[in-house]
Image: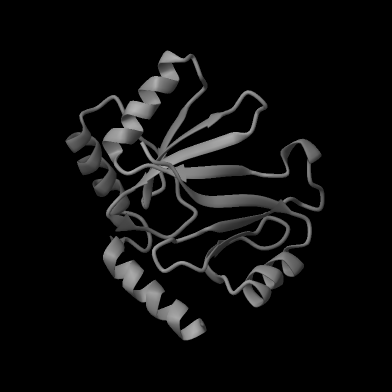
Length: 177
């Protein structure tokens, strides 16, 4: 199993400065956002194949020093691998586990021994507007999980094939560079 780092979620106290730094200094583009400060969440990417690599989440003016990093996420190559990993976590008595789809991914969330939140994910073939999250049942057969996830994702804003979203996102990034 090969893990790839997917994205980092960061609680911030000064959304304006952080957003400016990531977009103007580092060249990320805003791919989605929800809410207004202090409840704003901003999704950004500099990779045409990633909806978000950085998520800035307004902390309301304070940052808990025990939780500076919201979570980190690693990608596995398939839904089958994700389901095997989930089973391994269950067998190791790691819990609680949160099993979600973000429309764009299937994800398992859990905490490490020092309480850092980890997300292991694999991509779906679809895109939906973010933020999005709904519970899924990884105990059901893979084909049934795929069919049910797609049916739900089709009801969400921004639903389209991942390839269509990626082509549009790639053009935006090329124009930005």
